[in-house]
Image (cartoon, rainbow, N blue to C red; front, top):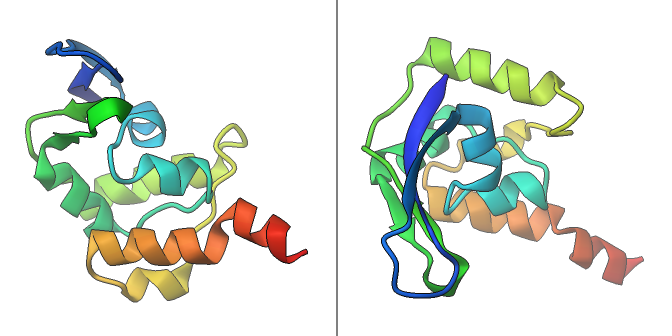
Length: 126
């Protein structure tokens, strides 16, 4: 699966550029609100959280760049395929927390993931 996204630069007044990329790579590196949960906490989102992000159409993250795309959602079958690919591919090293799947708002899910799986927090408590 591929996605066409407008990548915004990290700094400066530019409209960025459009790029067609693999959906998994988009999710891992360019999804404005989910990439930190995937990259740093290694957690894959439930379908309703992923669709909330996809339906947003993206966002400008200020000095952190951002991305825009045409809002859409994925089906249950597409989700199962993407989830299976990303959870079994060693380059992503992702996990899925069933307990957190009950959270039904993206902001709450991300907050709980960052609280529970933040590697810096775990290092400090050791």
